[in-house]
Amino acid sequence: MRRRFTATLAGAGARFFGHQELKQSYHKVFDPNVKLQSYKSRFAYVCMSMAHRLGLLADLQSSYLSQLPLVPAVAPPNHVYDRDFLNLRLNRVYDLPEVEIDGRRPQTINVLVPAFDFKSISAGFFGVFQVALFLRKTGINVRLVMFDNFYFNLSEFREKVLKYPGMERIFDELEVEYIGERRAPLRVSKYDYAVATVWYSAYLAEKICSATDNKSFIYLIQDYEALFYQANSLHAIADRTYSMNYSAIFSSESLMNFFVSNDVGGIKSRGLSYTFFNNACSSNLLPKNAFIERNRAKNKKKIVFYSRPVVDRNMFELTALALATAFKRGIFDPAEWECVGMGLGEGVVELLPGARSVSLPRMDLSTYIEEVSSFDICLTLMASPHPSMIPMDLAGSGCVVVTNTFKTKTDEYLKGLSENIIPAQPGLNELVAALELARAKSMNLEDRYKFAKAMKYPRDWDHSLTSKHLNFFKRRLRAKSTAGSSSNRKTP
Image 1 (cartoon, rainbow, N blue to C red):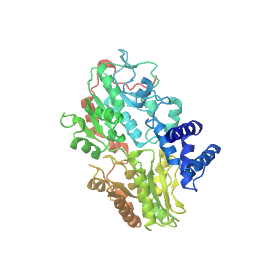
Image 2: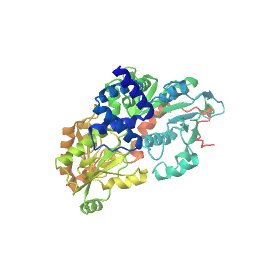
Image 3: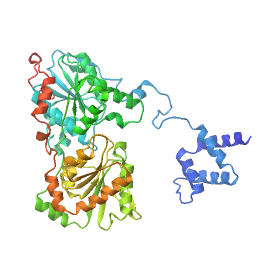
Image 4: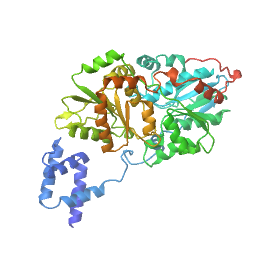
């Protein structure tokens, strides 16, 4: 009888109150400091307080929780999974655009570009666009194929890209086609090639190959992207792309070594072709006198951290805890050090009672390049065999950088890039110790400048993509004179 009564009360409460209101009011029963945000939550608190005094609260909680549907965090509103919802959840890899042969088209290298927004564009897209520009040197027409459904306005994007050095005219110099809404098929010649630039674009690259005479595509691999997901459907279908038929170009040596040493997708055992390049970094090393004078004149030194709480592989929790611990242990004094978050998503860290980090706004590339020369220490983590670009951007600008090791991203590899980089295992004590060492090293401005200048990482794309890479592409992308491939046709 009691169980039926509490189940009825719990059901009524679930219908009348929202889940967050019930959750807040339940916590306030045991913690009077919890603030209630609405009249409903206050009423729910009164009801729960009465139930608690009557000894019914535990039964009410159990009944309420048992009635909640067991669904994932991302689920359709009515919990009915139709094909549209399922295809969206799987990045539409089984709902691809149609591909048709058009005998009037010139032979083309189709660089498949996923959705992007200039407010949150990352270094990975700079690599995609620079590789696309470089591919013109093969003598074959190059087309940027925007295959995702996102807001794309060519005239607006032409204006916005002017703030990204080295890419200012990309939408004028290359053919551009947006097919995200799938209103018409992607038309290709039978001699066309495809370049996958993110794991789910590999499925479209494979489809293009099936329609043309070229049965292998180029795979620009900028991370082991299966790691972006837990052991789930997306993890499985992302990992499957590495078993496709392709030639790979990796965006760092450590990433390439990870794939080869682990024979990911059979890249080694199947004898696939591969090479690597290093993305040009966005460092800003001032003249030596200006560098030293600027740093000596600071009222406070700056420690910057890569703040991306919305991207799991950037290990925000460990980053934030390492900073808070370093301040608590007195390694950094908030009177002498300003702590700045740089990245994507709101992530303010409480360093000490009354002392918190501040967040930089999102910046275009030109503004970012100006900003990187102002930092003394950087903490940037990534659970990936790829080193990411932040360590090189900052180390090459004279900042002391603490970053983590991971598989083939070894201590030796990272130190070999710059002596301004301090590698550490991804553990709290190791990172705090590395921050303490970074503080000591940051005081030596002469060494910081010397190590920045000696960094072994390209600072421009002419040193990043070279004749070696052109030969790699030319051996796999053969121009067909009968297809009119020698012209780089611009957007119609």
